[in-house]
Image (cartoon, rainbow, N blue to C red; front, side):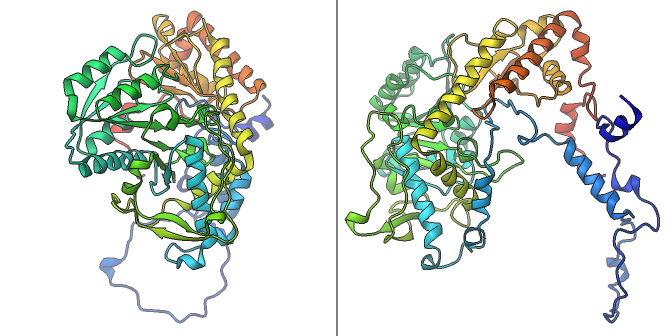
Length: 515
C-alpha cells in the first residue's frame, strides 16, 4: 500500500477524539457581533469552570464524524449474518412512506376524525397480520417483541382468571428465546423447562411428564417456532393437542416468523396467541436499541382481553374488509386495504389488560411494516420466506464438514453450527468470530442457544445474493483451515480493526460511559 493509499483508506487506527484534535483559537463558524443586550450572569455556584469545549474547524468536525461512520457496520455496507436477529434489507421506500408529512406530523392526541388515514393503516395492518397468521385479531400496541411476549402472557392470564382458573405454571422448552422464561416469571408464573430430543424437536415424553406432573396448574406452553436451533418442530400439531388436552394455552414466540410467512399459518397449527417482531420479519431497521414493535395475534376467545386501545371500523356490511378464502393454503389470500367509506375509531376491548404505553404503538414501525407487506403482496411474502430458508440451507451445505452441525437436518431461516472441532484445535468460537472481522464480516451470534456447545448461529436472510453467500462461505472455510494450521492467528484476531481484542467481560460489567 502506498503512502497516499494509507493516508486515504487507513481505517485500522483508532479515530482521535475531538478533544485530541482541538487547537486553541480555531473555530468552525464566524458569528456576527451580537446586538442582543447582555444579561446578568447566573450565580457563581451554578457556573461550570471545568467544561472545556474542543476548538475545531468545520472541516475537522465533518471529517471526524464521516470517518467514524465509515467504521460502523451496517446492512447498507456489509452482510450481517447475526442468527436470530434477521439483519436484512430495509427498503428505503418504506422509510420515505413513514416520513410523509401526513403520517410523520400526526399527533397522538389528535381526534380520531382528524387522523382517519393513520387509523386506516393501523386497522389494515391488524387485519393483514391476522390473515397472514391464521388468527382472529391483532393488537399493535406492544412496543417491542419482549413487551409483546408479556402482553400475550397477560392476555392468557386474564382469560384463565375470567374462567375462575388459577393456573401458576408455564412450560418453556430449553431451546426457547431467553426472554420467554423471563416474561413468564415477570407475569407471575413458575417456569418449568422441557428438554429437547437429540434431533432438536421437543421431547414428547418429557412434555407428557411435565403436563401430568403439573396438571391443572399449567397455564400455557411458550414455544419458539422455528426454534432458536433454526428448526421447525415436526411434532408441533401433536404438541398443541397435548397442551390443549390439559386445558392450557399455546403461546407462540413469532420472532422467527420470517421463515414461515406464506408457507403455513400458526393459527392452523394450534397456537392461541403469538407475538410478531415487525422489526425482524417486516422491514423496520433492526438494532441500536429500537424502536421496535411486537404485535400479538390471538384466537377468538382471547379478543376481549387485548391491550388498549384497539382500532375498530364502523361501516356498512357490504363495505367491510373482504378477504378471499385462503384456508388450507398456508398463505395470505390477499393484502387487506381500507374501504373508501369506512370510519375508524379507537376502542377499549371489553376486558382489556390495559395500556402498554402512553400511545398506540410505534406508529412509524407499523407504517414500514404495512408498506413492506403491501409492496410484496401474497406471492412476494411467500418468496421472501422461501429465499430465507434456501439461503440458510445453502450455507449449511457449503460449510458442512468444515464446522460441526448442531443438527444435521434441513434448517429453516438460520443454521446452527458448533465450533467444537476448532476448539479442540486451539481456537474457540469467540476466536472464529473475531477473525471474521478481518475478512470484512460482522460476526454471527455466538454461544447462543446455550444448549449447544460453542454455538455459532448464522442467518444469511433472504436479502443476500448467491455471490455474497459464496464469498462469506469461502471466508468461513479459510478460517476453518487457519484454525487447523495456525490457531494462534485466530486467538489474536482481529488484526485489521481499529481496536484489537477487547476485554468484553470487563466492558460489560464495568462500562466506561464518560471520558
